[in-house]
Amino acid sequence: MGYVAVKGGIQAIEESIKRLKYERLKKGTVLKFQQIEGGMRCLIDQVMSESSLYSETLAAMAIKQAEGSPEEAVFLLRAYRSTLPRKHYSRTVQSEDMSVERRISSSFKEIPGGQILGTANDYTHRLIDFDLNEETEHDALEWLREYALERGVDNDQADLSNLPKTLDYLREEGLIPTFEINSDEPDDVTKESLHFPTSRSQRLQILTRGQTGAVTSLGYAALRSYGALHPTVGELRIGKLPIYVDSPFQDQKEDEDAYYIGEIKVTEVETLFPAEVQKGNGEKEIEFEIGYGICYGQNETKAIAMSILDRCLETANPEYPTHNEEFVLLHIDSVESTGFISHLKLPHYVTFQSKLDSVRKTKK
Image 1: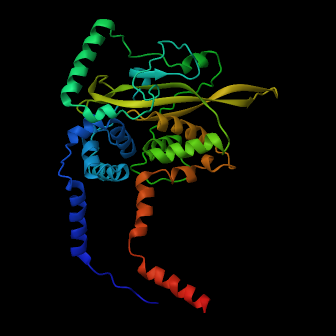
Image 2: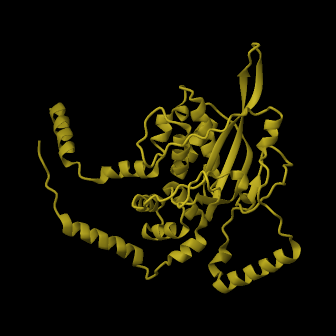
Image 3: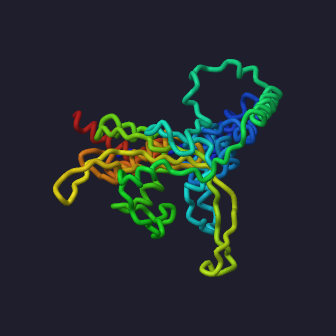
């Protein structure tokens, strides 16, 4: 078995890093991360979700360093996240407390509180706007001024907090099963290695951290082929959730007060799946089961796909790979999958030479 020596070493690596910086700067433009934060909202939301780190500024800096590569940006943020001390745990967040910016239902035309279209590309023509080539900061500020005046004159600022959950009305009719609140501490996939079978808290964490394209693709596969599911979006809501932490100086049992430390923007989806249920008298009834999805920022497609996979993994049908938790959970993580595929670029000289020798012997 032969061995091919690696040449170049440290000097070659240093030159490669310099070349990387050259490619980023060669057009003479230095992109400020504030510009990324201001104009790349969807990319920032995606990177924050996959990194499990809510910071628009840090996400923008990682995107700049990664030259727009979401996988590399997520790698950078997760690496940075691993260095941060965990000083507090927040109180349990209730999505009913959300200050809603967008809220729609595909199941009902009329919902309590009304449909709120909010911000979405769904209603645009999906044509390239070439006028953006001429857009200036002055134009943007002028448009914002006119928009503020228009909203101030023509629109009353409605209270969009604490809107009722659409699915609660189905529960009241007995069309959705009710469960007791589970107050057990959730498992934390960032502190302990994953072991199968997993708990639902672990599955939801990995799904919300999953690579957006991978989660969407597997969700699509479950819709189209593997089980051919076709759920209905009971409610999709986007908005900001307040975050509170207990006082570190007093006994939590004696002190009911908490510190408000800020808010996070999330996308939450509850999807409805019709299912047959066997009753005690031998008869079957139809009721709805729920799939749940939530992620940082505005990422509706991923949240919906996550809710589909959540339901798939709850039912765990062995016929379909999209219902297999090992298949799904081990293959949607962007850092794991990107890292494993990228490792193929590293030297494999010795192992390949062994394979090459075997091939030559068989040819002889």
